[in-house]
Image 1 (cartoon, rainbow, N blue to C red):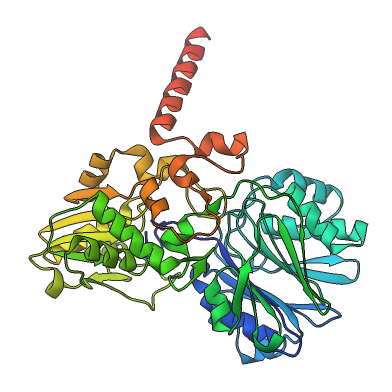
Image 2 (image 1 turned 180 degrees about the vertical axis):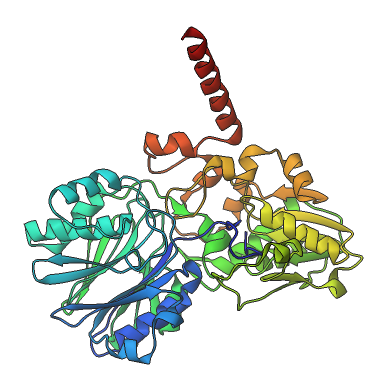
Amino acid sequence: MSTSILPGERPDRLEEECAVFGVFAPGEDVARMTCFGLQALQHRGQESAGIAVGDGETIMVSKDLGLVTQVFDEASLAALTGFVAVGHARYSTSGAAASWEAAQPHISAIDETLIALAHNGTLVNTNSLRARLIDEGVQLRAGTDSEVAAKAIGDITKKTHHLREGIRFAMEHLKGAYAMVLASPDCLYAFRDPNGIRPLCMGKLPDDRGWVVSSETCGLDIVGAEYVRDVNPGEIVRFSKDGVTSEQGVPAGRRASCIFEYVYFARPDSVMDGQSVYQARRNMGRILAREAPADADLVLGVPDSGIPSAMGFAFESGIPYADGIVKNRYVGRTFIQPTQAMRQLGIRLKLNPLPSVISGKRLIVIDDSIVRGNTSKKLIEMLRQAGATEVHMRIVSPEVLWPCFYGIDTDTRDQLIAANMTNEEMCEWMGADSLAFISLPGLRESLPDVRDPGFCEACFSGDYPVEIPPSTAKKSFMTKADFAAEYARESEKAEKTQVTL
């Protein structure tokens, strides 16, 4: 879902975990460049931000809770001098919640040398490695899988005396999704999981001034770097004063780029694997108009990610597009909670409909996804209060039926509305006149320019490219009906035991 109406309630949308950014540019203000890059990637994480800079001898790090512009100012950036930098903007999905310890980059010591790691994604098998590190006396403070990766790289590097061996060890043993940038005092490394689940691209500064690595191309654009290529699945790229070198850290596996990057996560001005995100969203709307037409007066998009798709739907259907929903762009994450009375009044902190546009009209409303359904329900209520006579919801992703374990904030299946209700039940519960989702083949069709097709679609299909540990899957895969059945079985078992006694 593109936005939550009330702060403090559980987000009714898929949330990306993090943004990573790296610079190797002798003679440049790499801390400032990294700060700008993180601002361009702020949509990927708003809980904390951090920058680490290497000057050839040591690593300095500055990080804190908050948005990039809240964490960094002129004084803090001026203190970060050097020629190699990595940065991170965080949204927590696994391990520790928002805290200074969980903020990245994570620092690891190799004897007297420090390294700094920034990670986008989620690992699914860190428990055994965490236990091993603790047994060896390594201190872990953050409780995150990213910290485990940083400490593991440092620990193995200390034993082998080769940083790339430490990185290779991590890539061989860590399972899940990771796009990582790592700074030593004099080098920048970028590496990606063998399935390429989370995005990572690299670009070159003009006049051979240096190199930039970013989660999205919009991060390259803001610092004037020209996109060169994506970091390949399983690849390790090293940037140093000796130039750029590349090697295959682990063999590439089944290609499984997160398809939701195109639906919602990525900025519309980014290009991913050759595909314009904006054009992909336009295509989604056009295909959905063919798959699920409706008779209406206006097409509306839920800001921001639903707007390009709404324009595509309007173009294909011939129904006029209108800006009928206004988004307050100055309300981000907040710790100030509305009172219950304000909740009951339906306070509109983020989205507000325009009655002058909506009143008396039959609407087709385009949104990117429905996760728990609460925001869609409230949005439909607001549109009807603004005078809409009909509300037809059209969603440019298939039904979210399965949780994600690779860096997206989705809950267990019992929290996913589409896993527990039929389409008709969802439509009735939300109060829409009709509800339809794009098909999975239709979503794939909307991405014709992707150079190396192969997507992770697990949240729609349940087909996970990296195996999920059984202990995690057992609880996460249960629907409300499954929980009810298990409760009934346990109750019956307890009753029989009591009778026997």
